[in-house]
Length: 95
Image: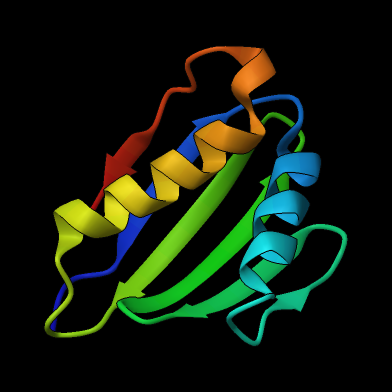
């Protein structure tokens, strides 16, 4: 099984972007959403997001066959679409 991945994305709009991303994915997946957390069962693994005052913190629990490079690309590309006014976001990935 692949190791869990964590990502921290500094932004002062964390709750807004997390909610937008979760609602976007809710059209395809059974998302659980609160004001500060979201859980999304993606095809390549479970994503749990936490909106902190200064960042979105995500934890991926990838499936054994997950392509980790693709997983990162999907997350970053989707979040960048919602944050386009903010400019380039920084993604701090760790295993």
